[in-house]
Every structure is written in structure tokens, then in C-alpha cells.
Image 1 (tube, rainbow over the protein chains, first blue to last red):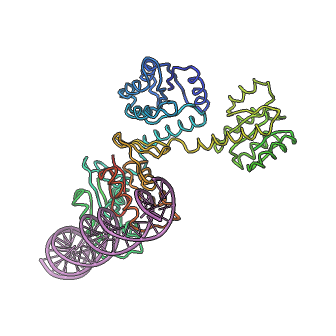
Image 2 (image 1 turned 90 degrees about the vertical axis):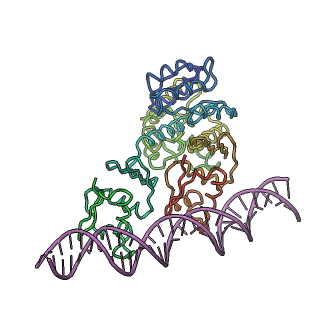
Image 3 (image 1 turned 180 degrees about the vertical axis):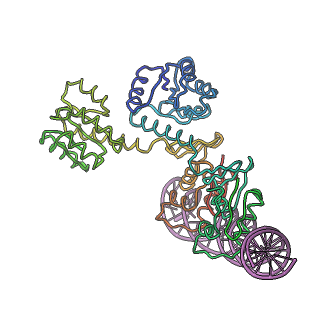
Length: 220
Length: 220
DNA sequence: TTTACTGATTACAAATTGGTAACAATTACC
DNA sequence: GGTAATTGTTACCAATTTGTAATCAGTAAA
């Protein structure tokens, strides 16, 4: 959604974005913008700072209060050099700004980048494993169990990660050594057991099942 | 890449651009242009509107459908006065047009301008990162923390920038070295730690979390 | 030239982790 | 029930990893 009081800008920018395949809505002022935003729930709002009646900053603040738009990216259009408006803009909840004069190529690639960013934040990739009340975030090396955050040392984290990739599957000791320690490292016979014990202490005894003569498995 | 059915034009324009240091490919018609464009992925395509078989407009539309060429600038060559072709050209996805007769000086400066624009748009809006009260402006190498402006040395700035691109994500030491120092540079084992320490001093201790055996992460 | 700063290194301190040994407990199997 | 094999547990220690301060070379600014 484009918001600007100048019809020229709406047309030029709108044309460029449409021809990239984006669906474009326009609004001529802040009031209209809020109205239309509620209806259309745009993914991205490009907002001119300088507008009559309600300026961009104020419009932005109002837009940010609309719950449906919490995932909407808002970016300002601002004349080059007005840095004060940048700061004020960020305070108002903007995510980025674009400087005038507008270069179509720059604009389009900026819009692409912003929407890509939005998309990325929507699906939290496969780095996250979720089993019952246990959430393993590989990217952040963080574990949440029943809403409580737990920080595990590396080996314990990796051991848990491994077992959790396939709940119910029995991992042979050999396999665990391979994947967690690396098959060139030689460790004593009780090492795995000790680490399992630590995990049992921290995550819960019932989650780890021993299969005698074979290995361990993680159960929900 | 130049596309025109007249060999004279290819030669003259090609000569002028080559002598400015550009790498020039040529094609005699639309079909050849598409073929060669797929192979060479040119940064800029100059396309004559009037060509036998497939005209410039049609060629442009086909070129725009090639994913690899989404960042390619396409400009038309058109006889002065044919405005209709300008409109049609923009609809077909062109970025600019050049009128015949061609004045070499004008042409070269236009090409320069177009390629400069491309370059600017290639590294788009990662320019500003905002996390809580911290605003990082990569374009201006400026950081604002709680409204206060902070100036960081280059390495510290880049380290912070990197970590801030994905708050919460743990960046492995290896990855940090790669992205901030460049993977050909070899630095001592304590270098990253020392820089982290300086950032902790300037930005706040709590913002940087150590993950032993792995790396560091930035947290809000 | 002087000064100030950046960026890296070093050496040592501090903290944490990972592993082991010794022994206890449990299980499987005869 | 007895025995051997396997796993659980604990305390302890060594190795690894990180934090920190001091220092130094290189470079840009004054």
C-alpha cells in the first residue's frame, strides 16, 4: 500500500511495483490509509512523511496500533537529509525508510528485500524441533521445556538434539558416538551414560529410555 | 549486450563502450539475444525496437521472464519521435530508452548512469537494522543506542552488525571470522573475544551472550 | 613529529566442560 | 537364585574454552 498526497508519486511507484507482480493499493492521506489498511491488510506500507492533515509519523503510530497489522512492514518515504524524521520514524514503529528522489530500481529491490525479510520471519525454518512440551532451537542453542528455558553445554545439547530428531528411535551407542563425538574420538565406556544422566536430571527422567545392550531412545 | 539488426550500429556502439572498458556482447536479433543473455547474464541490454522477426518489445518481454536476468537493466534504442514505443517499452519491462541518432558521448554517459544505478540497487536495504532501542545504520556507519549516538571502530561495527542481523542466532566463531575478518585472514584465538569485550563495554554487557564451545549471540 | 586510536597479540586468570574411575545398581539369562 | 554383563551414580580432575588486562605495531589525525 502506497500512501502519498502526490498523485504522481502514487502513479510512478505503483506502476513499478505492479509491473513486478505486486498487488498495489494506494491512499492519498493518513486517514484513508488507516481505513484501507484495516480492510486490505497489506504486507507492506510505504508512507510519505510529509502529508497534509495527518503526517506519516502520526499515521504510522495509528497503524501500529491495529492488531491485524502487527506483521506488516512499514517504511517511510523521506527527502534525503531529513535525518530527524528517520529517528522519529523508528520511534513511531517504522521498519525502514526510502529516500527521495525515488529510483525505481532501488525501490523495487528494497521492497523485494523487505518482503523477503517478512517471509523469513514467518516460517522459523527447520532448525527448530518441537516434541510435546520440549522445544529445541538449534540456531539459538536454546532449549525450552514446559515454558522454562534451559541452557545445555554443547555435548549435552548435541546428544539431546540427536535423540530428539527421531523420538522413539533407539540410537545405538556406536551411532551416538559417531554423531556426537565423531568416530575418530575414543572415549571411555561410561561417557555416554554420564551425559544421559545429566540430561535426565535437567529434562526429566522419563524422557530417556535405556535399551540394554543397544543404546538409548527419546520418548515423548 | 547490444541487440540490433544493423551491423553498423553494433560496431559503432560496441566500439564506444569497449573503449570505456565495458565487456560487450552483440546479437543480431531477438532470438539470438535471448540465447546469449541466458549464457552471459549481461548487466545491461540495449535493445533496438525495430528488428525483423522478433521486435524489441517482444524480445524484452521474453527477456524479463528469465529469472537470472531479474537484475538486468534493459534499455531500448528508438528513433526520435516514436513515443508510442516508449510506453510500450516500459510496459514490456524496460528501464530506460535511448533515442537515435546515437551520440556516442550521450550513450556512454547514459550507460554509466544505468550501471551505477544497478550497483546501488544490488546491495539493498540491509542498510538499517533496528533491534529494540538499538539502531544500526550501515550506510552511514552510525549507531544509535537509546537515542544516543555511538561511534564504533570498523571491526567492532562489523561484528555488531553481523550479530544484529539475526538477534538470538548463535554465530559460530568460524562464521564470525569468515564474515568479519574474511576467511583468508588468520587471527589469534582471542581476537574475537577481545572485540566482544569492547562491544559489551560500549553497548551493554547483557546484549551479548556467550555460548561456550560454539560462539556468540546478540539478544534484545 | 607527536598524538591518538585501531586492531591484534600475549599471557594469565577464571570458568566451564567433558571425561574417568570406582563402585553401586540393575538386568538378562541360565 | 546366582552370575555375568550392562548400566547408573558420584566425585573428582584435567582439558578446553573464555575473560581480561597489558602491550605492541601500524596508521591516521593533529
